[in-house]
Image 1 (cartoon, helix red, strand yellow):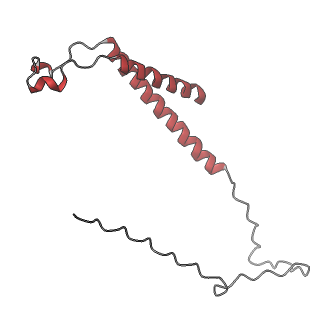
Image 2 (cartoon, rainbow, N blue to C red; image 1 turned 45 degrees about the vertical axis):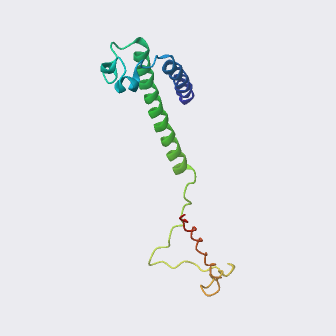
Image 3 (cartoon, rainbow, N blue to C red; image 1 turned 90 degrees about the vertical axis):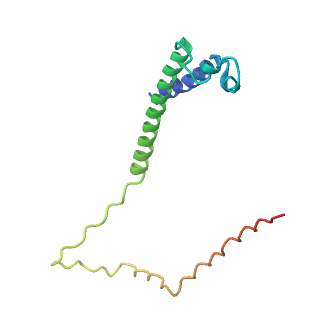
Length: 137
């Protein structure tokens, strides 16, 4: 289903590019406001909405919806995959407070944790050099 919506999304994108490029530009533009003959139409309405502008609006709406839908699916799949990727190991149950656990003589001795004094200190990072000051002429 995601593949279908991705294909529709790409096709809408390409179709919307062509529809926008087919639309005619404003004839007068800002040049009319600076003394051109049709100064009243520089900031006025363009008249009736054409078929291409309606088609552009429909494509833009569908493009928005497919973008939003694909982003929600992408976020949901990335969150669920990161949560279920590594299950937590099960902990061994602790013995009851009043009972004594049998001691094994065959067990290997536990390794001692390294002391804090045995660990090597991390090298201090040197600060980044300051950028050169701008020169004035």
